[in-house]
Amino acid sequence: MLDSTPILVGAGQFTDRETNPEIAQSPMGVAAMAAQAALNDVGAGSSLASAIDTLAVVRIFQDSYKRPRVATSFGRAENPPRAVARRIGANPVNAIYSNAGGNTPQKLINEMAQRITDGDVSVALLTGSEAIKTAQGALRNHIDLNWQEEDEGTQEDRGIGEALVSPIEIAHGLVSPIQAYPLFENAIRKNKGHSIEEHLLAMGKLFAPFTEVAADNPFSSYGTRRSPEQLATVTSDNRFICFPYPKLMNARDAVNQGAAVVMTSVGKAKELGIDPAKWVFLHGCSEANEKLLVSDRVDYHSSPAIRANTQQAFEMAGKTVEDIDLIDIYSCFPSAVEVACKELGLNHADPRGLTVTGGLPFFGGPGNNYSMHAIATLLPLLRAQPGQFALLTANGGRLSKHATGIYSATPVRGAWQRESNTKIQAQIDAMPSPEFIAAANGAAKIETYTVCFDRTAPVRGIVIGRLLGSDQRFIANTDEDAQTLAQMLQDDFLSCSGNVVSNAGLNTFTAA
Image (cartoon, rainbow, N blue to C red; front, side):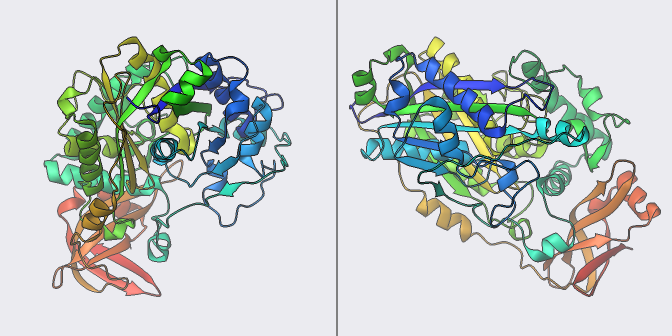
C-alpha cells in the first residue's frame, strides 16, 4: 500500500425536516450541512477544512435542464462550490460544479481517486443536495425565498453534459426519465413473457424489500413499509404516472437531502492524523455510456454499458459478484434495477439485498446526488466489517450513463491503478442497433410503448416501433382518444401491429 493510494476518510448525510420554508436550508445550505457532517466524521480536528484543495458540488436539478443556467424566482448560488466552501471554512484551489446525471457522484470519486494518485489533488470534498421540498412548499404557500448567493473565486462549471434527448423524441413527448423508463419496463415485460398483471406484481415484489430498508434509514424521506400488493395496486393515492409505473414505483425528488464524502491519499491521511480505522479503499471502478439517445439503443431490456463497466471494475478489484457483501443498485425505477441485475447475474431476491439506503422511490431521489448517499451509507458499514466488499452502481439520464465502484476497508494491494474505459466505450458505440427513421410511413409493429397520465386520466401514448418492410425503428404517438388509451392499458399492445403515418413532423401509430 503506497502513500499515493486514494482513500475515502469521511462521509456525511443531512435530511432537512424543517417544514417552514423561510427557515429551512437552501440547496447549498443542505450540501454544506452534509459536508460538515463528513468533516466531523473524519475526526481529524478543525484543520481539515483548510486542507481541502478540491471541492466539487454535484449539479442540482435546477441547473440540469437549461443552457445556460437560468434564474428562478428564488435565485440561486452563482458559484455553488464556493458557496459550500464559505460555509465550512474552506478555500479550495479547485472549485468544481459537475455535469448532470445520477452517475456523477461515483464518476467524481473515480476522477478524484486518479487525481489523488497522480498527485494533482491532496484533499477533496465532494458534496451535493436538493431542497426541492422546501421550494415546492414555498411556491404552494406563496412564500418568497432568497437563495441568491454571490461568491467570489474561480469555478469550473462543467455544464449539463451530454445531450440525452433528440428533437424528434421531444416532439413525441419522450422528454424526461418518467417517460423513458416505462418504455424499458414494457420491453422487459415482453422479454419475460409476463402479462400486465403478472408484471405489476413482480415489480411490487422487487421493490417491497426496498421499502423495508428505507423504513429503517433515519435519513429517508418516504420510509413507509409497503407490501408488493400495495406497490402494485393502482389507486387514487398510487395513480399511474406513465404506464406501467404507479406513483410509488417512481423516483421521488421532492426531498431536502444532502450527502458528502472526503477523499485523500494514505500519505496525506497519515500527515493529518486521520485514524486508519476510518479509511475505505476504492478497489475497482469504471464508467461507460450507452448509445445516448433512447431511439438509438441496441434494445430496451439490456445494458451493454452496465455489463462492460461493471466487468472492468470487477477485474480491477480482482473480485466477482459472488465476493460482494453489500450492494446498492441504482433504483430510480424498477427497470433500472431489473436491467442491472440481468447484467450482473443477480437474482431479484438476492439475500444480500439490492439497496443499502432504500432506493430513490422510498429513501428519496435527491436529484443527481442519490449515489453519494449510498456511498455515505456504505462507509460506516465497511469500517465495521473490514473484510467485506461493497458494490455500487450509478446511473444517469435515461439508463444512459453508468459508473461503478467496488469498496472495502481492506487495503488495496500494490499501486492503485485503473484502466482507461476508451476501449469498452468504443465497443459499445460500435454495437449494431436498428436504423432510426424520423418520418415513418407504412405497416409497422410495436417494439415497446407507454401511456402517460395527468393527475386524473391517460393523455398520451408513446410508441417505439419497427416498419415491417425495412425493420427501421421509429417513434410515434397514438391517437389520444380515451378509447385508444384505455385499450393500451387493458390489452397487451406489445404484440400489436398496425400502421404508422407521418405528418408535419409527427408520427401517428394506429393499431390494426
